[in-house]
Length: 288
Length: 239
View 1 (cartoon, rainbow over the protein chains, first blue to last red):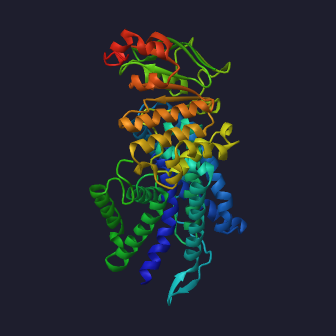
View 2: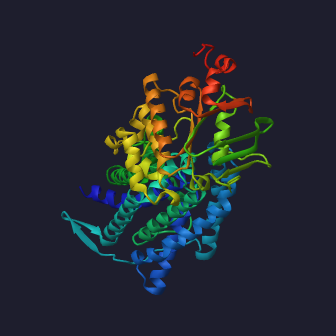
View 3: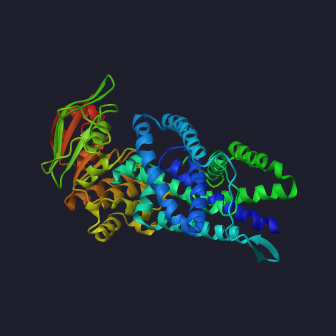
């Protein structure tokens, strides 16, 4: 029973990074392999804000997420837009963006290693127990989960019940038609890319409150997010949240009942099964 | 008035349009007839800003030069396109598709009245408001596409083969709704393969062949022109 709650708590943090990636890939059409670096950057920022200024990571999001938004806006405008303008087909853009962001990943990782070193970092925030249904869980994990749920819920409301949110979804469905209803597609793409980075950074700030982090771990989280996004169907925010919870549950179940060393194998096993049998994603419509 | 002068478009080495000039008044329907590959779709795409013309072209709306503007600015200038294949947002609901039609700032004022007007012209869209657009029939999707374009408060509406894939009955309905739209004062530029039905509702027509305008005139005159009948009306004399 307790593995279910542990799995959901873990999945909640995965959900934000996956939603971030699905916005970048689904709307801005950039498969951002450097997205995990947003998360690592946010971990270090949260650590620094907490240890140097006693600003807790939840409050820290208010500083970190806007910073990530601006940085990602600049990355899109200066590093990605030339690729978008040059690529004649979406397939070409996909290949170019994968190669470019793969390079970006090493630049960002190098910068963080240079700034923070290669060591492992952790700090104590709400490191106490809380009892749920008779079992004890880390309070920081529970708080992080609740914060993630609030952020994901807010995003859902924005995307579904505001004019600009609907426009963002329209760009994901059909960019050409979006420009025919007066949507400034290049700007909406930059916005979605920046928002995706900000959400991923928010998940990093939350993760850092209970997770030992280091400058090298970005790629692990990018891959998890990628698995979730493919499982959910590209651009599907609600699906990404559900798939993230599923992945959290799967990982926790394997770690609890089989062996912690096999969690990654389980993740990619699930990934391959989805690719083989539901290439459009578990929740994705075929050929939409 | 929508005015196009000396419009040429080149795709690589292929010249798709050659020195096209045409105009469209408010409240009239002009139809562009031509075979596949004549350049009809390219013409509408270029006016909409999806394709850039060669230097020397001039496209204007009420004397405002819109040549070379990005597509989203041209919508704001008052030109809406219902693209070939409809281009609706399939994963979104009918209501969301219509709401997005009014996304540009030119369409914010009077959005509610226009939605009412669209629902009057296409009552089905009011009934199916919350339905996901992708799950509708072809004719209904065409209504969504036209309704969405009308929501942008256009002075000029361009449609690229709207009757394609519709049954004769549905296309008759479609042409009827176009005359209803004309009554609201919107100018309509229609690209069609269905020459008979489109000439029947149009005021004027242009004949486009391999990128050139080879003829133009009143729709009624062209409908009775033996050469036009031979080329576009299947040779059957429509007396």
